[in-house]
Structures are given as structure tokens and as C-alpha cells.
Image (cartoon, rainbow, N blue to C red; front, top):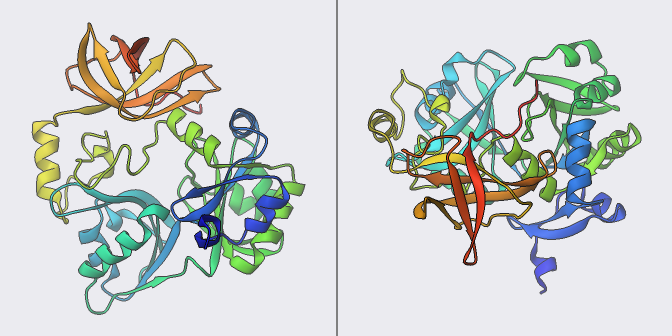
Length: 362
């Protein structure tokens, strides 16, 4: 069996190939890395509307009277603050204060919550959750029976709303709000969220209807985008990627995610995380803006005045800024606006330490 034959595919695989998407392996799936090109797709999202097949991300549902108490213990953010049809970015912490995964939790009703987790961590997350799941709470994995499409950009929400049967309600939905609606006649669970720093929706729909939804969005002028531009856009927006800025043995405090961690509740791993918040961490995630267009690789050393102060965790070329940008875990004493260099196979490339958010939509 070839590598291609062993990979999973999403319900939109045929559509990607018909559009000429360049397919690569990602998290065990065959996924499009680009169509027209990373720069063109990044600009489409920043200037208009682009869409990503994110069906590979896992979708879980939790039901039962004890669901809220379970999620309050198992996740780092304050789930109790959610009302019906609201969501939040959160973490699945482990007992030692590291991160099993970063996730989104949605409250559908008092006894039903939904969760989206990273594709690469699907099996790990499910196994971890099962060790914590109490009697009376049921977890259902509905990933295979659904698809998910992220429509992102300044025009994205308007386009989705115009295709829906609840256009006014969709347009008025707040960030991280959710709504059940039909988009181009396809039943969707829609969340006003994304991974690009732009406005838009993440649409969950039945797998069998994904092609119809995708085509309707194409016909409405939404550009298909791949994994390459998604990575560029999330770095520009200051958003972490599991395995790069978050790991099982790294405190989320070091990654600058203290805002995701409750200051009032006890949860799995809360003691070591609170200790890291109070006492600091050996490194701190910062941004680095290069003077050139070169792309820094994870693990590249960052130096200040010839002294190594940390290393890169993610790097991309930013079409928005027309230069290389990166995340790096640095000595906490290194301040923003400090000149630095990044090692490129023995060559010191000049840059500057900056904030983690290279782009923020006004």
C-alpha cells in the first residue's frame, strides 16, 4: 500500500483535486497545501474571503447532567461563563501543567457541549478525555459523519449570511457565537470563529453535503485556500500551533496564554500552571521580525549581542509585511524592540524582537 493510499481523506477530497489543489500529508490526512499559491491565498483572506477545508479537525459532543462539572475539571478556561450558543478558546491541560491540546468548547445547551480538537491529537485527546470522563457523561465522536469549512476574511461573514436562511441573525452573531442555519440549503452548525485573525465562520455540516456547500461558496466568490496560507495567516495573527508553541511539557503561561486559564477555579494541572503564572517561566514566547524575506525554521537560534537567548518555534514569510516573521521562545528578560539575529545555517540574519501579533484587524 502506498503512502497516499494509507492516508485518510476528507469529504472534500474530490473537490480539492478538481480545483488542482497540491495535496500533501498532514496529521494522517491527504490535504491541500495550496491552489493558486500561498501568497495569493493569504491576500485573498486579508482582502476578501477565502475558505479552508478543516474537516480533519476532530469534533466531539458531550451530553449528560454532569457535563459542565466534567469540562470545568478537564479544561482550563471558565466553561461556566458560557451561555447557550456560545463558545470559547481553551486548553486541555495535563496533571503536570503542560498542554494536551488547544481546543474550542461550545455550549449548545445546559446538558450538551461540543468540542473541536486538533487533527494530529485526535486519538491522544480522546484517550486523555476517557480517563477523566465520569459516569453519567457521554462523549460522542462525530468527526467522520461531518465536514467543516472555515470561511475567513473581511467579506466572509457577509457572504455566508447572504447564502443562509437566517441572514440577519448570522450577520449579528458575536465573536464565538454559534447558530444553526442553512447555508445554500445545507444544514450547518456555524460558529463565528477562525484561525486567521479575520472575521468569518467555521461551518460544520453533514459529510454528504460538504461538496454542495463548498461549490456554493466558490460560486459566491470565496477563494479556496490551503494549509500553507493558513499557517502564514495564523502566525501573522499571533495564534499558536500545537507542537510548536504548545506541547505536553510546556506551560501555557510561557506561550502567553494566561488569558485562557481560569484564575478562579481548580482544574486538572491548575496548581503547576498557577505556580508558573506567579513565578514566571524559563522562556517566554515573543515575535521576531526579520529584515529580509527569509523563513526561519523551528529550532533556529535567536541571539542578542552575540549571545543565544532562545530559539524559533514557527516561521513564515508574511505577504502583509513583506518580510520573514517568526515566533520564538526567548529569555524573559529580552524586551520588545530589542535588535536580534536569527541563525540561518551559520549566517546571522538581522531582525527585531516584537510582539506576537504581527497583524490585528481594526
